[in-house]
Image (tube, rainbow, N blue to C red; front, side, top):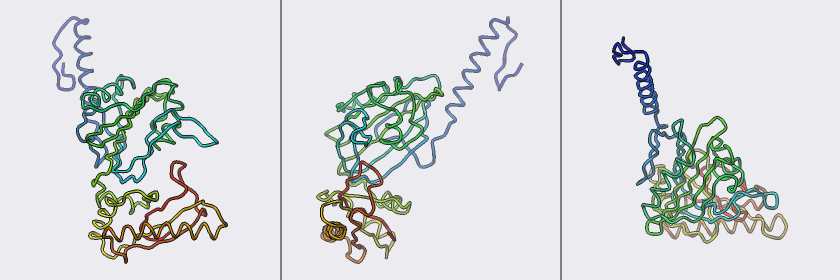
Length: 305
């Protein structure tokens, strides 16, 4: 008898059942291996994925302010966010893995954490289960990935830092109600020149905005903008200031425009052509679209407002 390319010998029923079980297990394993990552995705440099897992979400972007959660999710003054957090600036890689069936969130989290421990990362914060707060808030508020919404009792989170390489990692694992397990990893390379023109171009062309707080270092961003302008001569980038500082509406708009002009001047000093930069101010007419974004900031976008 042929079964999917395997020959099943004439054996007593008990032994044939064992052979069928082995073959079925092999076929399931082969099917899991055949699962493909989404196009353009890759494992973070130096890290090995959980066996037979595959990538279902992937992003690369410049993050002038990434909020690293260092505490459980809580609601304070009507705003849900991590109890404590730290602002980071650099190149951000985001990867979400689907873990093969039959493997738990604790197992997946432990596999990746062991690699980080072995590589010399130190843990900044760890939590498990309900001590982490609501999984819904981790999924939708912290990471913005609905697939990560699972059971509060089956979630694990850790923040890790490698001072030598200036890499910081946020790691989250969860099991959903349908038993599916996901492992998510945010890796921030601080102060990285990896803020390449391809990443900047991709973000701006998708209509996304880069934002900076006043006083943030702009060297890496200026270099990336110049690479972008080399690829797209004649492109115009607009710096839009947002401010809720005192005074009437006209004063807030004027103040936010001054902030945008200051950032523009700094970018020009760093070598960005003045003709490629415009400065505008909107005060607090346009609120922050994410509670983690500062109310006093300057946004960079391509094309119209």
